[in-house]
Image (tube, rainbow, N blue to C red; front, side):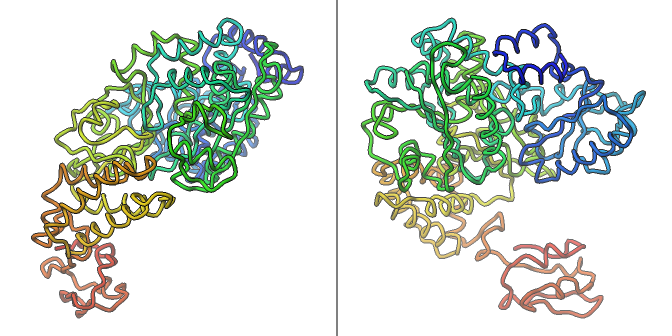
Length: 630
């Protein structure tokens, strides 16, 4: 099917079934469905955009026009996942995976690869796709991608997210069509229950059960909400889905509306996600134009529409009742439960709320069946999970793996291990609400129950990798600083508790801690978990408790020996110049902001520790490795 045929379908506003019939007749990969000789897919997600992928696209189009290559199509897609190597560009039909592209590289690819009779530019390919013998392997067979299973991310990096015809061609809205034409609302809920899908926002509550509660609730008006207020430090899973395949969320919300008897939906997305917001708005307008949102969807008599509400970046608004309070126009603060939102939620009406990743799994479940989905993962945690892999790891990026995949597989195989030959120390999962998994638990399968058993949690999917140079006391302090700042202040245990915990941790990192401080931390943490109003306060102590459980010796080093072995806590370490390594280049002295370094040219220098503010500029500027932390 050609682009012209798709444009004709859009212009004549033929129904979804007509669009899909033409797509099915072709039956080839999306990259070959347009009649173009080659397609060039360039990541247009936030990560690659920040690395100037738009300039890459601009140079591609300029060079193609200059050479008269009108049979090559450039497509701006969503995230491919391997963010550390962006901007990423893939050329089909070869599947050539080019990484770390620049505008100059893009022009080289056009002139050497995209011209008729051209060949792949091996030196610009992702190194993982080129073997030692020089052979090129498909990127799906590289360690980063080989063990992944993309369900929620199935269309990210595959389609142009701002073109509904591509979304339809890739399968979006097929599940909505199936639900409205062949299933009853009870059938839909039964399928969701049987699938075992649990909420991917962190709590892991069974999605089908939540929908069944809302369906059973009495009310003339019901609401369907999407939580896209992704606030965990280092998390970008939901953002990537919205940027790469916004239609999958709209479709899933419409299916849920049909299942529970709702005609209204809200997507609550943080304003700091401008690309996601723009593509959501485009997707909603296109879906309305095609009759996939609004009145009488696909001639079924079912009405459903969606509005976007922008969040102001308050972390507490990721909590379901605070989010609904914010949509209502009030200050985002949590409400006591019960009543549950499924009974009395948004505007006092029955409401279901799921996060972006949860919604992204609905279409595959309806299309492939609950048995298919539940066969993936573990008995208690079916399906896959998307993680934002970051920190001290070689392959920073977005990964989706079956539940039950071990932490070792994620770190050592998919993640490519720790850079610089450093040792793996811990993985922090669940963001400010989660905990740290030590190296001794690296073979733990990643699922809801296994993580809880070792003192962590799944959370929304942030996974920060820590190496031997990380101080676990400082890590717990970092997360407490975040939650103390983000507490809404409504309840005393959270408002006062987070600040008091932070004071105790700060005292320890400054070398002023006392042995009894550890008892105070544990007592306060347990009180907060039991009496805080919402999950923010209840889970805020988790990073502290998990690090005290597995790395108590580091707390004791800070308190008893006034020592930070990782040399991170400034109050407990100092800088020293090794006279055997110092060449007297004076670079450190010239860059010291407080003039704490002295010495003659070509003679060893010294640091006056009474003046040193421990800024680290001397260490970063030394070319001979002469400056050490002690």
